[in-house]
Length: 255
Image: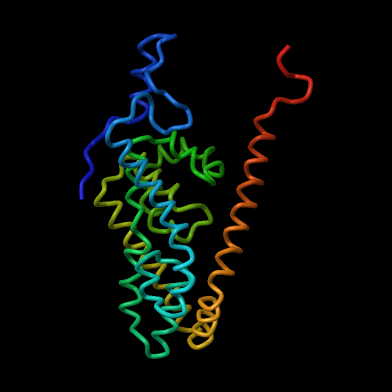
């Protein structure tokens, strides 16, 4: 798989600025990661990322119901933590093998990662700062850029283990011009390490994990409703904080 080399977002911004003040590039929307009129690559990458988000929510009820009945299928679809643990526990009980558990986890874990690498190539830091959790790494961006592969290579490998969204690491990898083949190899190593850790845990738990998975599957709709409600509440709280931060202090409004 190859992605054509594209003009960095910073270069396009400089080109637009060179046109002179009062002449902004057409269709430049600060809410979008690109400058000016979107190219075919911008639209394709953006749609792919939107689809990845929709995929998560559409699959959520099925994701929970499958972990107690067909955990390997759940792995293939989403590579979730609970599906890998459950599949390994079923393997311990004689239903499947650990090799199948590890192989099935790879497409589930990696399926959308390349989209975020591509977003980094296309839009760079502008898109990084739009991602949830990016404020934690914002103050380190210049240092990350200077470090290059000394940071990005190990970061991609351990991205599944870090307390920040993996998508941020993948976007940084693209932004720092990591080659696609290199990214896929490092991402594969990281996916295997993560899947191996979870599979080992599931195999050690054995029958207890199988029982827990079956209970979750039986009450999957209730678990789904609970996850949706919690997500909505956290989103609303986050939006309120952002609104309060953006609002001008009292007494400093427009005269």
